[in-house]
Length: 317
Ligand SMILES: [Zn+2]
Image (cartoon, rainbow, N blue to C red):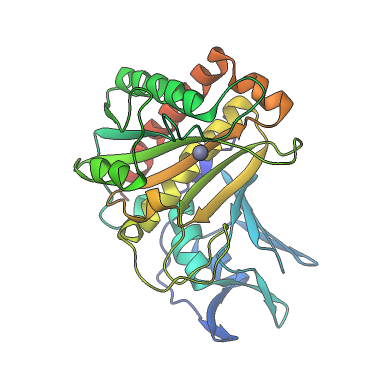
């Protein structure tokens, strides 16, 4: 595991100190120094445009001008870029509240969810084949991986619900409606990626974009609250747990933890993520994805991550 999931274990004591909020270009920001102090990072270094925050089990790096940050080498896309102000690197308060805080200390999530059930959503189905690769179709890979994930989760003591357990077609709203019937549950949608460029590869994990922020899939900042936004903190913590664990386990290329307003995430009334387990259009990854043993590894890795997530959000301090 190395440090990849240690970020879920960082529980530095809360400092009774107010945030200094700066307004720049109409948006609110906090400074690098304020973040370092608030979370009690033992070391904080500035190197040109880079900022490095160190704790025994966690390293976070920012870069002025960048649209992403790294926590324990896992890439997180920001809602707004890091900006410079008087020699300080500034992070938007949205990214502080919706990304850094739930990732760095998930046990502080207010009223953390208690769950015993995982709703597993195998992407696509029937005439909706999804991505097509040289060895097979996304809809078959998502179904097989989802069935394996259900078994793996059951073996770890969870109840599971599948939105589909065979080659049938479901609309996105049917998937959401089904998932929303279960109370103490989380939601994981399984997909595989495609690209016109055969070189595209790696794993990416999506959480719903918070209100007032942009989506990695384009579009302007969205200002209406969505049902899925009630779980903003849990969404990013769950995405972090799954993404970091899988990247570390199967040594995949890290495409980052991203934000989007996919229909399947917008209406979900519980913590939910959409996981893209590699590119069926990349020759190397397509071969792996076509291998049942690889899909079994993926399923077990996601299941282990769910166990970690449950422990992380359940911990109180
Ligand atoms: Zn898909």
